[in-house]
Length: 59
Image 1 (tube, one colour):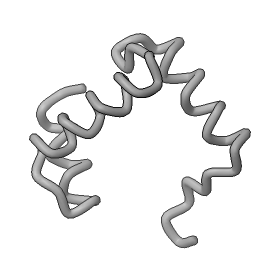
Image 2 (cartoon, rainbow, N blue to C red):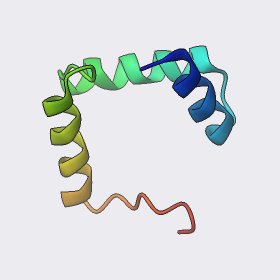
Image 3 (tube, rainbow, N blue to C red):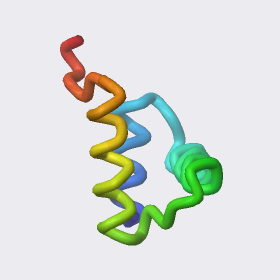
């Protein structure tokens, strides 16, 4: 994940980019995935969809 992406994501979430990094690292640790691996990212995304996570910001 690039610094620019982390900064953009942080701005959307109201967090500093280092906080975004720490949280993403923690998520990867808890789920035992490598978020740098596209296949792992896809698996996490599909799992959240299957669990009913709403990605639409408008709610």
